[in-house]
Image (tube, rainbow, N blue to C red; front, side):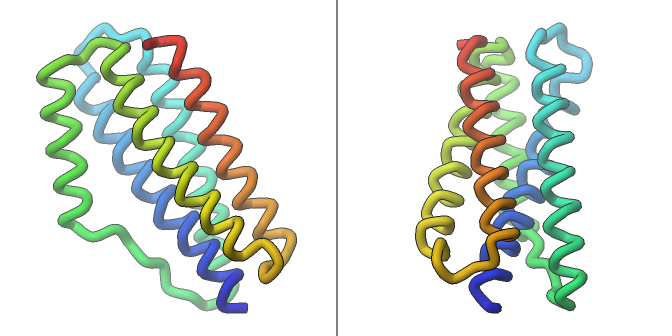
Amino acid sequence: MAENLELIIHINKDASMGVFTTKTLLEKLKNKDNKIKGLVSDIKNEYESFYSESSKILADNKINKEENGIVSKMMSSTAISKEVKADNSDSAIADMLIEGLTMGVVEIEKKIKAYDEKVDKEYLKLAKKFMKFQEKRIEELKKYL
């Protein structure tokens, strides 16, 4: 049971950070004329969906969610502000998002391999779906490079 929930906690925490960073990015791009904003919004919505689904699983199992720390969020927000200020081109935004999504793919792939035989198939399916979402969005973002 612990392995199941560790996988879901990871998805929840990663999705939470994805929501935070994409919301922050959209706020920084609000008054700018970027073509990538629609895709960023779609990515945010998908992160919200994974966050909601994983939160429900954790609540059903009476597990408190692990929130990302304020320091992580501040560092992320500062980095986004700095990047957008330096270069707010669609190419630069895509590059930044690809970097974050790639880290997410690597981490979830490690978790999937570590827990492959130990978790409920339902949770493994959610983890693989989360990984596929990130991989798909990376491919879509490459068009902006």
